[in-house]
Amino acid sequence: MAIDVNNESGTEVDEEAILDIARYALARMRIHPLAELSVIVVDADAMEQLHIQWMDLPGPTDVMSFPMDELRPPSKDDEEPPQGLLGDIVLCPEVAEKQGKEAPTGHSMDEELQLLTVHGVLHLLGYDHEEPDEKAEMFGLQAAIVDGWRAEKGLTGPSPAPTVS
Image 1 (cartoon, rainbow, N blue to C red):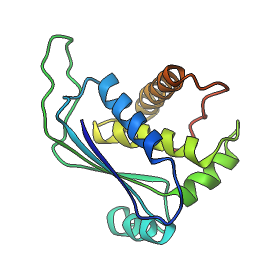
Image 2: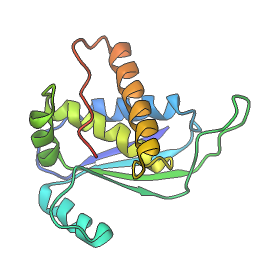
Image 3: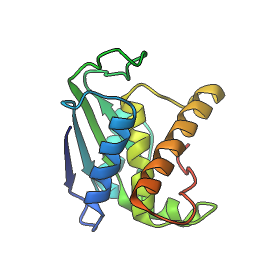
Image 4: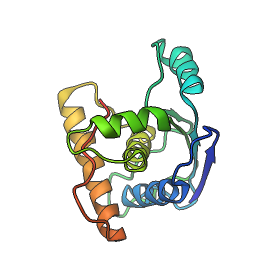
């Protein structure tokens, strides 16, 4: 997978973990190995501008996803996944840090960014959380991916509870 992480935020983040969890999520979702993804980390001002421009909502948000080729996971085990451009995920460490601290289990900014990366990947793959059944499916899948990645990395302690809504 071709995954680029570009930190424009001025905040030090664990770019390797973002890259690794994005790669893990895409592999787990059986996305073509030649698919391309871009992750951009921005400051609160830049995120607020994107949030206003694309969602017509004030203030910065935690994560935004901009799909390109609308790739979807294969529906059958023997189905060949399509290749193409997944799109862009934009993360805001300032919002992530605040959310991590406010989460029921409390976790670091980097743990929140990892969770948000998976959340963004799922949005690029067509998952949403507008309706209760969609939310249950997406957040269940998100937790399974984060838990699987953490287990593979030998990370201990509780996984970050979802803070995105």
